[in-house]
Image (cartoon, rainbow, N blue to C red; front, side, top):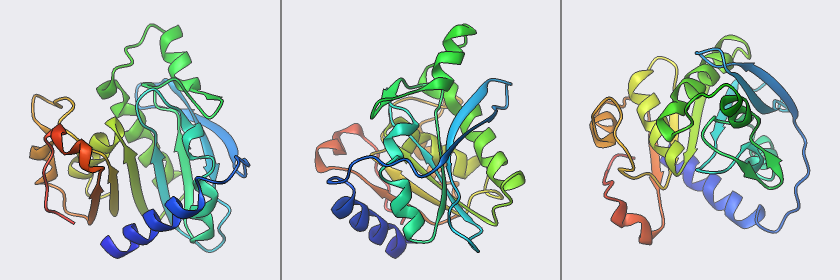
Amino acid sequence: MKTIALSLFSFLFLTVSAQKDSFTGKTITFPSTDGLEITADLYNNVENSDTYIILFHQAIFSRGSYRPIAPKLNELGFNCIAIDQRSGMKSRGVVNETHKRAKKKDLPTKYTDAIPDLEATILYVKNELKAKKIIVWGSSYSSVLVLYMGAKHPELIDGILSFSPGEYFKIEGEEIATFVSQIKCPVFITSAKREEKNGFHSTRT
């Protein structure tokens, strides 16, 4: 997992930054576990692949963050889905539709309020898209939530990519390090050196 993750990270870093957005997926909707409709971009362009990477965006952003990245993951042989979590707003000109619906319904949109959206997406990919293997990818606040998902749903998640996690908040009254110690699947964690002050430390790879 570590070798795969490093290869993905290096490939994307070198190729994505200079590219213009070219949307190659299709936009879909499905319900969260509490009934809120989730908007997602589905990139299932890879034939004969039963592995999906679920892409969760960072704070303030939307599924648009992954429009230049998902096609590259397709090229590497992975089908992908990028969702709008209810905690977020806009990225690369793409408005977070799930957030808009949540606000219209007067639902809370803090970071941990997005947990039902992550759970629903994992179940959708497993049950509706028939994925045999699921890798979850998180950045900033969602990098913490994917680690929590890995601890809570070991039967559904086969790998985790966590970019810039930190002890940003507690879940169920516990620090995220508590949940990291419970994860059974392979995990790749990375961050910028300046983010070390966030207080998250793990040697698990």
